[in-house]
Length: 478
Ligand code: BES
Ligand code: ZN
Image (tube, rainbow, N blue to C red; front, side, top):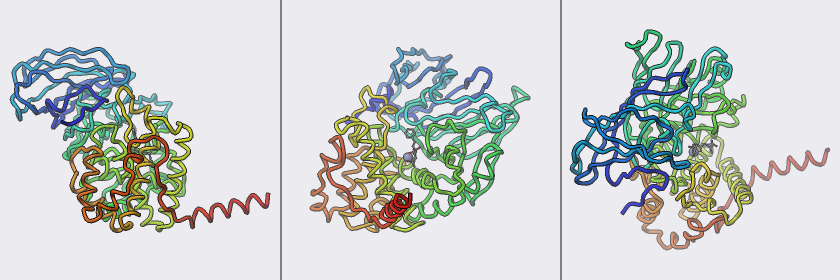
């Protein structure tokens, strides 16, 4: 029996969404998206009569199931989970049967997923701007959906925006055309043919321009920042090639970058086909390019192999940090990889000092029952997770051996959502000749204990020693 997702009201055991057709109008005056989300839903059991979707601050105008009007009730709002939308199907569904559930909805100006900007808040000062951030549980504040990473769907979208603006999504661009209903508007179309968890649905609307920086990469930004961005992110194609060599083929076609306004709340976000990044990466010297290596790595760990619930978030971030540093290692040397990893261990120590070594959110696998994933968020899944992987690399035979495991893991679980038990079972089956070594791992201490890990990986300190020596020379002359 699969465990439920504590962060969602949806029951993927009853039915699963396979496809979304989104049609919506972006209205800057009312700060809302209004339109329809048509979900193709498949029954997972017999005699299905009812389904529950996640919503957060949405107004639901109408629900139509296979062209027939359907009854619906919006439940009471939970503090961070939002409100369940319970839909009664006009007929019973048998296991394996599909229906199209079309919901007419409108977002709130306070949607926790959407940031709306006035023209004055942009670089160009002439046009408004909008971007979304759905991870972890905010897709439900954009559209009604089964907002759990255990469900994967393809999508097609048609987005109406004012003529002078550009819309982009986490998908392939499928052209634009005049909006037949309003001559001052255009409709941008998008197609995502690879099934994704809904937290990877993303939208941006603004006066965006682009420059080509590689055979599969455009960098998008407001005009004022495109050239600086093109220079900063020029290593992208080299990183993509290394990532493919390490992890397997890149299945998403395009890898574009979007530079957002400064209030973008993360360093980067791995939206498929279009990574979102903060403009604070524009240092001028490419010194923050590890963030790009990180988001590129999510194209395999996270976007192909996905955590089943946010309790297993370390599967996304730990593997991604590990891959990010393998890319850095190829570009700048193994010593550099160890320098970065050692910095990560220090970061983990700082975080655990701050949160407290008995704090339950310092578990590799925290319990998120009634805990907001945004509140549990810290460097622990990143750094405890990647430290575990580096420790296993060193235990099981080194970088070449371990990348074989990682590639096989990705192949095994691509297009699926998994939990830590799936990961561990695969680890034991891949290293079936090294079970004696694996049994030396104190799994309980790594996985089910707060605070620092039970063992520290071995770090090559050549570069960090050089830093310390230089800092001591500075101290002496002052
Ligand atoms: N997917 C994350 C950002 C995220 C995590 C958003 C959880 C919402 C909820 C992204 O890949 C990430 O990890 N970004 C890091 C950068 C990285 C180099 C560690 C960040 O923004 O700090
Ligand atoms: Zn990440």
